[in-house]
Amino acid sequence: FDIMYGEGISKKGEILDLGVKAGIVEKSGSWFSYNSERIGQGRENAKQFLRDNPELADELEEKLREALHLPASKAVSEEAAAAK
Image (cartoon, rainbow, N blue to C red):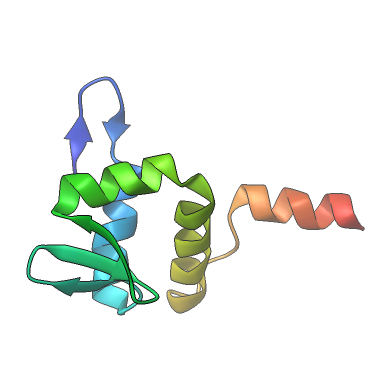
């Protein structure tokens, strides 16, 4: 994991790393892709793309949680409770 000054542990970096390990994010050379869409050349650019597109980052996190059999994130759980 990355420890970033002023940020702490980089959640976007962890999403990328775990996404690659789980086969959700594709890595070809220095390019990262998700659903056949390139999200960045190099890890830092891909992390910035996820910061700029929080909906996509949330989608990736939820897919990772499903793949790793983890409970849904707090935000998704709260949305589901509010919908009831």
